[in-house]
Length: 279
Image: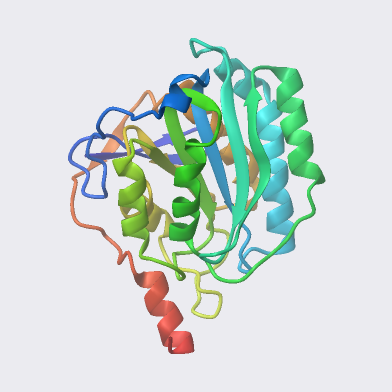
């Protein structure tokens, strides 16, 4: 069953394990290689997968970067770190666009307090902003999955956090990539960015949050934090990271939605691309 709830000014759609047709069956025990068994233990291994497709304008890309940097050094985030048994997480940050276009900005780092948080935030901000063509959520997910094996850390939870402003239109179908990631015991959360009026030219769609809920996210406690106003950007990113680090779900659950087939086509992005470009 899915639940929708409002926390402050940010709308949270939380997909709880059980009864979710979008691939939220409870994963099996997390499998570790021998190397992972010897790795440094952290509370969460977190991958931040950030969209830099051309549908994002330069101002949005700058705000997105600032949002992640400011969230990591915020008092709420640092307090959330303390709730885990180890008081530290490992994180890597990469940008993505087309199915073959992924660039790691921050290799795996430990964040265990203000000093390490400042260092990661500084690296995010100093990297030149770029843009690229196409939107491949599936490519981002497929790129993210093996990063955990080479992280050098062993977390109680593994999370891929995907942010983007459009539906998948490049690479394999997003549901296939999602299901492959979920089968490895990895949770996928989403940050759909919904600042523009949908139109065919920009490949934006109505109800991108619903698309993310039904086609992208999955795993125990998976959730979506939509951004509908530019002013929500930084607050939404901070809220999302705090929930992930503290392993919390909204304390109040309202507006239950019964588990059902996807409410939006999970191939809508591919369909729009074919309609426009014919391939």
